[in-house]
Amino acid sequence: MKQVSIGANGPKTACLGIGGMSFADFYGPTSEENSHAILDAAIAAGVTHIDTSNVYGMGRSETAIGTYLRANPAARDHFHIATKGGISKDAQGNRAFDNSPQHLEAALDASLQRLGIDRVDLYYVHRREAARPIEEVAETLAGLVAKGKCRQIGFSEIAPSSLRRAHAVHPVAAVQSEYSLATRFPELGLVQTCAELGTALVAFSPVSRSLLTDTPLAAEVIQTLPFLKSAPRFQQPNLSANLALTEGFRRLAAEMGLPAAGLAIAWCLAKGDHILPIPGTRSVSHFHELVAGANATLTADDIARIETVLPVGWAHGDRYSDEQWNGPERYC
Image 1 (spheres, one colour):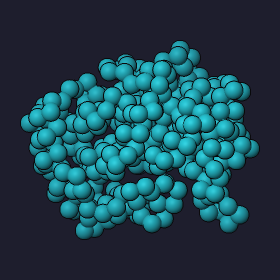
Image 2: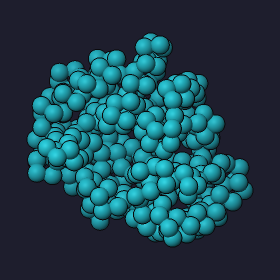
Image 3: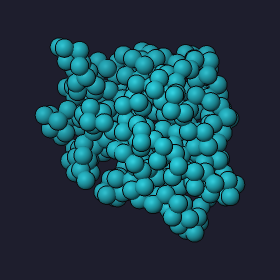
Image 4: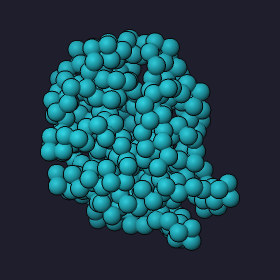
């Protein structure tokens, strides 16, 4: 499998990663056994990067990874492990963001305990605290590297201008952002800035939360998932429009001999050697579909055919609701 460098001159990982959100019931019920089966399949396929967070299931995702590592000690050397911190709650219990040195280090310490390791390979700030200069946050993260608690640093959902400011203080190895055929705003600066700085662009939701698969989530299932039922693309009439539009993509994938999810991954990888998609899954069979895409090579003609079926701006509805937009930086 092709390799991606995590940061300029940084370690290399397989070009496909695992999004740990699915280990915590985010897209439907799962079990630790299911999560462990996916990690087994990842080792067999040569997939190395795991991307999780302290808030996925309030630590449940990290705990599932930790129990796997304890049961399979050699797996620690196989996996490149990333986690995130920086989301907290205010006095009223509402979601808030805290990038203070005290909060980020305490969150990382708790993550390390759940994971059962003494250092993560990559530690991101999950959401930027707008009032705190990002240069200060980069200094805090650099201090965690110096203490040996993480090897490299990253940020999630920040603007290209913020990336440049942070990178001037300490090399930013990775920026995580939603990126797929349905969500292409990173092409307006983030893809390019990451490439220029040698920063990996870690693309979450590369199959657009099931829209770009052969079996999109049914409307009745979506209603059981708090995040998706609030997301505009998954509300009617947008959902029906998006399902109809992606039928052409599913037919094209079949013509090209790939699962739809695999074709979505192959497209994402074709957009840059520094791009690392991290789809989440609760299914080993679906994981194999994703691996098929990571092992595929698309021609310029293939890309043109894909982007004719799903041109820029095809999706109906925003990727986030107004409430969900609290935290990510908008820059275009």
